[in-house]
Length: 427
Ligand code: FAD
Image (cartoon, rainbow, N blue to C red; front, side):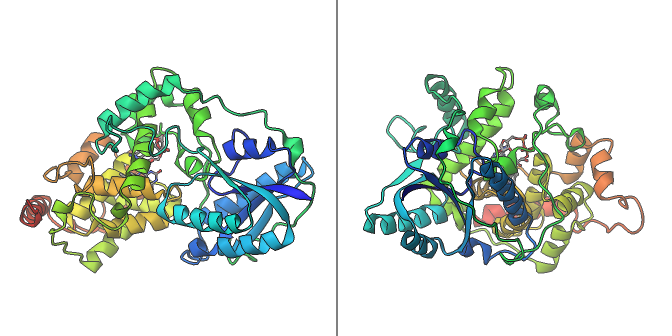
């Protein structure tokens, strides 16, 4: 029997899923597929909270699919090899995917596309996890924006004239009827993580504008892992926003801004966006890095953030900015070290946002904080966690003799950072 295949990747939902919607309209039974990609999994520890989240989400998807007399076909391996094998078992007529713009994903999809080509099978790919993709918001001459404000302006101008109505009425009776057992997490080589992704919460958005910078207020949405893995549709989230929620919308536009930066400037994965910073002499002291990772720098807000990250896989945005700045400026440790640590720990790890924000904090990024802006972590604490409610939660011993003294004195570190940056700048 001829089939269409819908390949789930970072779009783990049935509703308002663009490529799935098109697959179900293709007049062929649809086989839903997920591939645990060994090229990604082999790099991860056995207990990884993201893998657990993906796995649990797939189980729930499989349950939903069972009510349409179908199953999720869950396979593991190198995607090209998995596809080769699949094509020898099924008569696949068409394949549907939602686009993924990360460098590895682009290359993976290119390889799968050429394999499918050899069999004469078309690969239909769709925009799904952004409102505007890489070449839709560009300057008049077609070149990409590298500064956020004009990008956002153009984005906001373009939004109303486009139709983003969520696609709810997909034909779910069009699935291929079959059952396939889900592998267990253990069979996939992993164990369940105690760190869980919490549900997103949009109930505090009225206060977002005034309170989002105060970690103890806890008014942010916790949308990030859901957007990362597509358990929610970005179209639906934005469609439901009120006009006065523009500050929140702005954050969602930052997400797309960094995605198009990564697409157009893939070298940022390993290099400074601005090469004039290539001459900075990072100190890269390993013991200091370790203390930063463990939340033992003697700066309570920095330590609170790192401990929140280590314990929950999440860190409040203001505190991410403070911890990142502290690593790059106070300790003069290469932003790539911090970026890699966040990548290991964050439930919402997203290459484009993580890289973009780390380069922002280090001053090396496209629209970055100027290098001479060095956050004072004590001032940041006074300003954003005055009552120390957030900090006390994560660093209960902060005012006892057990708490370490500061790893480096602020004024000294500030001067050292400014001198090193100035010296390293290639003008
Ligand atoms: P909210 O404040 O409710 O924001 C809503 C959504 O807007 C977020 O879910 C996210 O999709 C987007 N958003 C918000 N702030 C930013 C931002 N500065 N840049 C890009 N998108 C943003 N975000 C990630 O999703 N993945 C990362 O790997 C990541 N790494 C970061 C590293 C550093 C050093 C810094 C300073 C920020 C990083 N961020 C990252 C951005 C931001 O901290 C998180 O998106 C946010 O804290 C997630 O919590 P929330 O969903 O409650 O955010």
